[in-house]
Length: 337
Image (cartoon, rainbow, N blue to C red; front, side, top):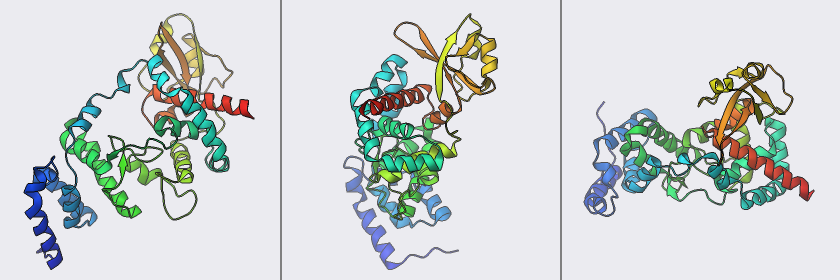
């Protein structure tokens, strides 16, 4: 079918094209539009999701490639740290004390979230503490710019981030927000919980029923969305998360793996010299977690709920940091009561 344009659209495109050379030469703004892969993406969004081509052109004109973001995703600072250094980033006073204050301030919302999802307040609070220090550091990068930069200029992760860019534009339309105004991490994570676009669309909830899913400014939606994320990923109410492991012999090494999903029963682990420091059902599935200390290793038994935390960030160290922060916040809360 022959494509027709309104007079307004023609005038807008003409204005954009007229100004493109000047904008493209200034810090890279407009340069995305000169690329065939970007034009193909725009056409896909028009045909698949009924976006306006003129609108997409405007948005891509207003962003630029960011070499600093490529550098950041290529060399993540925390990714190379051993556990004993990684832990120190999160188990600090301002995250513990901040967690206590957040819990006290939003106690009713946290209790309601636990009642509806089974996820305890300490875990929800700890995730917010680890991610954004209770919504103080949500990110400063324009999300569309971050996603486009990685999607079009970082082949190693292009497929994933182009999908997230697609999800982001759909999200902005659904939530009736300007995609150019939304900011987040260098990798496009957003709001207090730091949801990526697809997670936002799937798991964010309007917890206070005000008609919006606002994870940037609304503590109710942040709390409800984190709880919902864990519920959907299989959180088991009142079950243990992780416990110290007692190790004997050398057969335990066969259970040390980078795979995070529990695959052996506690009874199986016991047969190779791994026992729990806490009484648990021997039929529970678990994984053996090995962490680097200054001298030697330490071992933990990770259960289903530990695995669920790793669905938020696929890292045993991340899950352990969140767990230990939750324990420290709980202990501080008990001291204050």
